[in-house]
Image (tube, rainbow, N blue to C red; front, side, top):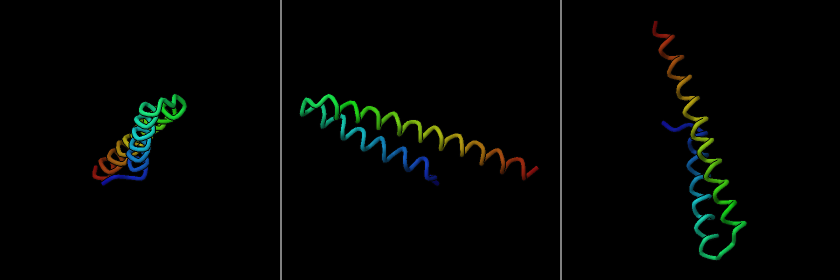
Length: 65
């Protein structure tokens, strides 16, 4: 199951990849930079989702005990 953070991460990474490639093709350094930023933002959302998952799993484990 994917939570909201993971979905945001995937969307930002995809958007960033598109911008990055479009910037490379057109020679638009600003667009390329925006793409790299969006990809980095996506990685942060993924990390936040992983942290939420870890807390959720820890909480479930603690409830079982």
